[in-house]
Image (cartoon, rainbow, N blue to C red; front, side, top):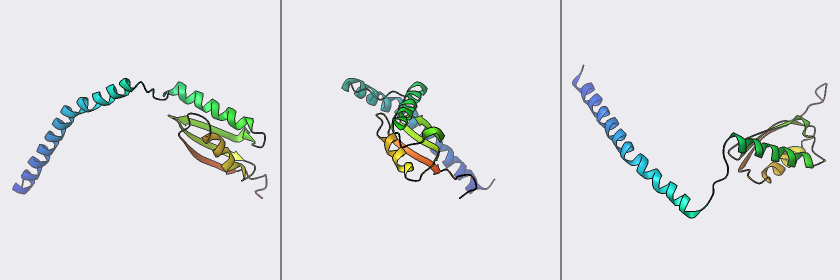
Length: 125
């Protein structure tokens, strides 16, 4: 092995060892004050998890279904931690931004990703 390669290897090992040591010392200490500060303020974070995601998804479906102008039969909604994704198709291009607007107005929705497309009629025209 060349001497320069040995020095690079030793230097890289030292950097890794120092990084691991710094993370081990600062990891738990940094997270503890943040957790105690949020607990002390009494602020509650929005519910997370699969159950909360399903509940938010149902709320978005219900809000879209209340609008009589929207044909929601081909729209699917996924939710994860407040981020909602709309997939599927609508019969009219004017409905695409309207569905996204309805979804973003649902309490608990943080962001909306709109992947809706216009449904082409049979024959493609």
